[in-house]
Amino acid sequence: MQNKTISITIDVEDWYHIPSVTGSPFSIYKDTHEFFQKWDSRYDYLSRPTKEILKILDEFNIRATFFVVADIATHYPGLVESISDNGHEIACHGLHHACKIDPTTKKQIFSAEVFEERTRLAKIQLEKISGQMVVGYRAPNALFGQWMWNSLHKLGFTYDSSISINSLYNKADHVPVGVTSTPYFPIKNSNNLNNFIEFPFSYLDLLGLKIPTSGGPMLRFLGDYVILKGLRQSLCRGHTTFYFHPIDISTEKFPSVGKGRPLYWVVKGDRVKKRIKNIFNNIKDVEKICLKDALKGMYHED
Image (cartoon, rainbow, N blue to C red; front, side):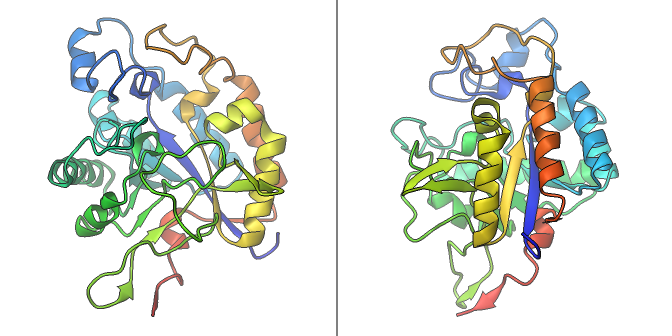
């Protein structure tokens, strides 16, 4: 795996941001606004594991990309600043982590205009509080519509990292043709210069069966052995990504709120933290770069 590169990415969201609680057609609360209007108990299960993740990244000398839900800046004072101050890239994970397309039908939930308005506000908030230019985006719940690329390009983003090519589920409103786990150019602007990049998730190809191995829930449910096999195989194709959530390593029990997904948080805590460290130890020979640095050298003209 020498001369290969990988980006370690972290989705910064709390337990109530998952679609069974807020921001989806089937959630308990319509959005995080309604959640905070009605919720009168402790909500912050994110700060403690995020600080622990920062220590782990420092231990392994990794500069990562943090996809932050913008409302974190409001409800968790100092948390986004601490991530930025530790030298990590700040990218956008939506304003309130709301689904942009329906998880079942893949129909558009927000118009392009509303999506742009909300995402512009998220970008401005994250840039103001971090002092960084925010150029990367990851769709909440990785639910992505093709129409979103043009909107992101219009807003000044230079890359997205939401597309997962696999045989188990589809979270996009289209099936990308000829796409693997390597970065690609999904759109072209008027002067024919490819200048917006998609960083798709990694996968393990087993005789044509593509198993998603980029991390997240798959890290919790499949374990580090399968994830590592997928990362190694994807690295043979080219640059790839690995991701997780700070709350994946939380040892606390989250509030029992939400419709369905009763087993969603069965595996987390120290077991997942051990898996993350094992993956880091097994990719020591791979250069780790944040996604905005991975952009360098990828732009080209037709």
